[in-house]
Length: 400
Length: 143
Image (cartoon, rainbow over all chains, first blue to last red; front, side, top):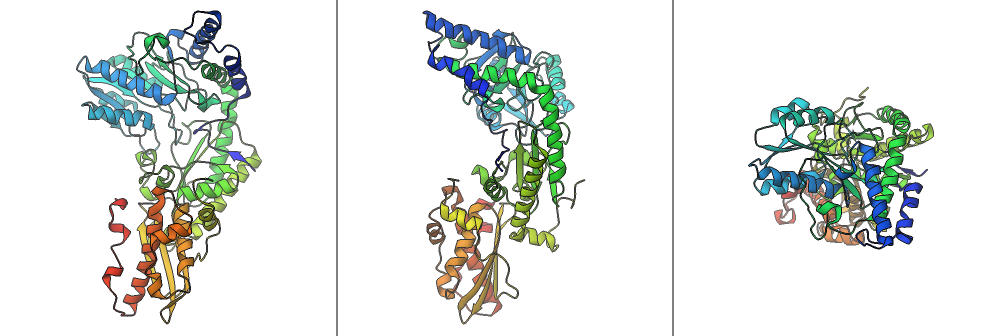
């Protein structure tokens, strides 16, 4: 069986997204900045796409800036808010310990430039507390940036409430919605969001294209200079075909969200229940407040990369927060942030889907993971130490 | 998977000499769970020759493959030869490892040395400490 269970990494493009792109490569290939009709036809499609993307997240077209993806959108939002804060002597930023590196590394860079960043804890359930955000806001806070949903453990943050707190205190609020957009309802107005990042390839659109929403009235600085595209906020000839693909994919994702989301969440819960039958395993992150397609586990006594390689041999594509899969020495900062100790964080597994799995697929996945975990444990000296009492177990034998 | 050579994947998928040896003559364990890799080597020694060797590894694909390859390289060899096994030899026998995985082959070399040292100590055999450099636990790599 072939099972692609790494949709949080990227998704297969939808046929409709591909079909939406082709005319803009083969026929309407003009530069949107050109004045002849081939260029203007592209421009027209681009501006229509802006309206359509805006409609999907409850904003207006003039609040949408197309980017090369989620990382660029995150960088631009944060660097811009920081620069505009500094003009008013506000150089304090609030974020969380488990943001995506597009946010964390940008914040680290700002810290080197003299900004102060508060990284809020996210608790064992992987959810930041609204009152923690509120209490962290100071008179010199220029930005709060909290992800909509976490990319590794799928936990959904109380964005609307955090946005409300920020709005009341007059602090700009950015959210990295790369994992959320197209998967759960996002409404920038109801959610009190000032800036929001999305990435097309997470919802069956093409790679290399994304969008940044910036509420009217919030000042946005450009990151890339060189032209008047995107109203002077993002130079560079627009990726028209990519934008058309993203727009079609987002519309589909949003229109199918209600029905698909419920079915996917139900299959997720069955997969979680199945994996819990593996002794000394534990679900990462809140069981209910999580993305419909995200399942994340830690297993005692094994290492994640071996797990992934063996699952790959069984036809399952998955990911892990193990250090060995990232090339770094430490396991995932997300797993450490929810209090997982290093030895179990190395034994993590993330399975993410974009569709409901059949009972057969769930059974195959559970049996495959179970078999691989048993095989790796059988050759693990760490597991033997746990079994013979030389080391103490970290998890209960069965969580539920 | 292009991350690893065919040789690495073969030793990962079908590791040689996995397991424990009851009443082993020498046992060496290196690494720690915090770092994400532990290797344990069991030796059966007869007349200065490694007559049997088994390993247990908690770690990534290259850690398992490195231990498997290392056990193959020393099985049936005199101790003096086993002590000259380098991480480079393990890596070469595996047709190479990605740069950030080279420490796995270092662990394999150290695990074997630790097992031999254990044998020497258990049997009161004098050895040259220079043959047994500090184990991986003390290196910066492992926090």
